[in-house]
Image (cartoon, rainbow, N blue to C red):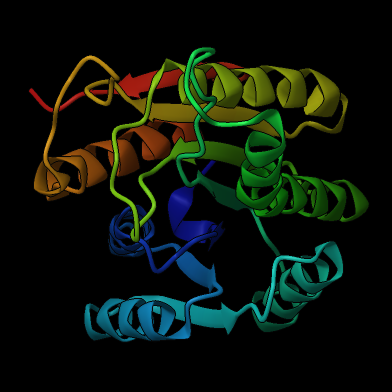
Amino acid sequence: MNIADSVILITAAGCPLGKAASFHFASLGAKIALVDTDKDRLDANYKACKSRGGHCFAHCLPDHKESTIAHAIESVHQHFGKIDVLINCWLGIDMPMLLTQTSVEEFCQLMTEGTSAFLSFGKQTAGYMREHNQNGVIINLAACRPDKPVPLTSSSRAMLAGFTQSWSKELAQYKIRVGGVFPLIFDEKQDLPPSTLLSLPMQYEIARSAEYIVTNDYFNGRMIEAEVV
């Protein structure tokens, strides 16, 4: 896929990873649709992207209801006429260890809050691409939550890989590819400060890995582990 001719929808666009992805793909000539529930972060990223010469559109979500996300996708379509790529950010909801104090009920609530937007954007964008016969790409990215920069663990990696593989098999018949990127250095065995977790080199390495997936038409159903050397 030619990035310069593409429209790229980025979720959680106000978070550091969303910002890095928007800057990176805008620099390659893509049209960028930014979506987030945090208006202040979204507006700041939109202005920064525009100041760099990016062709951008911003849509603030009042909530993460599926109907709200469907409306956001329709707004992007009305503005740009198509959506070629979804950059779908998974904001670090982890499975608790078996011997922690977290109850099953608390975990279920966290999972519902953390995955609803991620799943809804995947579902609604895939439906849009199928309806419009769009040979699109969905890229699942792992990111720290801006309000809680804690290391992502192997459980997040496993969940992201599972979604990526199952979606790729389901959507292959519609010529929609699915790939994923996970930051290699984020591991429960490492005690990393927030400044490292949100570092620019890591964010841009993830964005470059996403670029590779978009441009490589044979990449499907797999994960890339991004690493800063």
